[in-house]
Length: 273
Image (cartoon, rainbow, N blue to C red; front, top):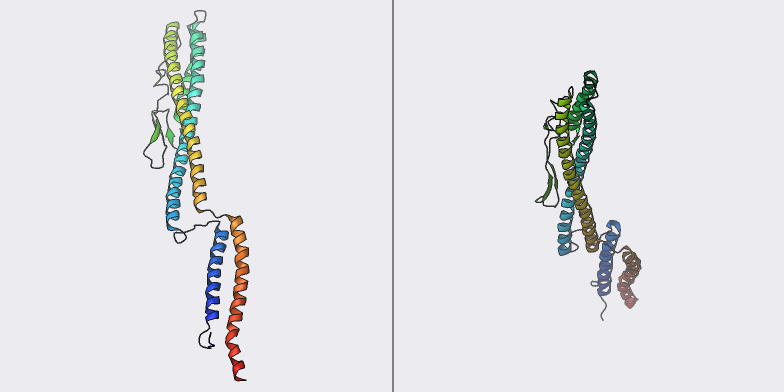
């Protein structure tokens, strides 16, 4: 091999290897910094595209979870309201049965009727205030169905129909128990109202259970997708740590090799002494 001060082949080779090592070192450092082996399309276009698609699915499921949470809140409020109304109907039945008793005089029935009217008014208060996030499924003023999306594309939903459970809808708004006959009539209406409210409680409870089951599934699905994305793009930090140590040694050796190669043209001077 000839001597030349214009072209230092050894230095060029050493520089190529050092540049390659530095490039690999940058990749490893990026993986350690981000925790990702594929952080962009430049790293692996196909894997990044797949991961992005799955991230979009995960984003859709996050919206589903939020929708299910809102539906759960609305159902909890509606169930609480319907249960409270059911309790009031039991008290109304007690007052009506007492007023129907022939052993009570008119004065006693008037007192019972006063309590009866207050309890009836309380039914309206509960129905009108059973509101969550501005939605009311128990009042004619709201009459809002409870709806939750169950897939990331928002094409499938769970819907629980609203029902009016105020005193008017239950046919109790004009009821009185000031006489035995009136109490008997009111008692029949109360029995029908109890049946209506219990039926609606069954619908609301079944809907709440369905939302709960879907919510648990969506959470498991989200976790599975997140794990899958991690397998695609997450870096093995233990491996990257070992690679870092190896590349740092190679970098130091490459610098030494380049230094030695750069000294080679200086040997030409010894030929002219």
